[in-house]
Length: 125
Image (cartoon, rainbow, N blue to C red; front, side, top):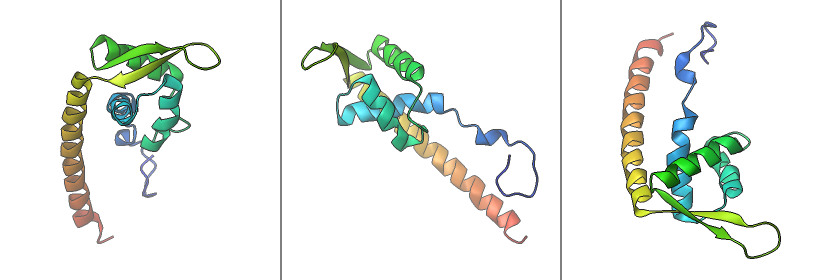
């Protein structure tokens, strides 16, 4: 529903494609610090993924990013418990971070322009 309370029509723009946003978020987190998948799930809360991200979504994207050469992983066998994969970003992944940040910046500008026009038209109400 649109948030201003005047009508109850469904607003499709409120359904962001968080699945698309997860890859740049994961890459940025891995650039800051190599991590295991479960650590990424928890850290993704900072980017608006409520209760962390779905494990299937995280691991599916990690495999895709690894196949594309944007992350690499190695088995970490130190410590107690089973071996875990430790993921880190590659130079190709860093390139994707830069590309995504440009795309995000452009979207922010377009959204800002929309809000400005919206406020010009509806602030009189």
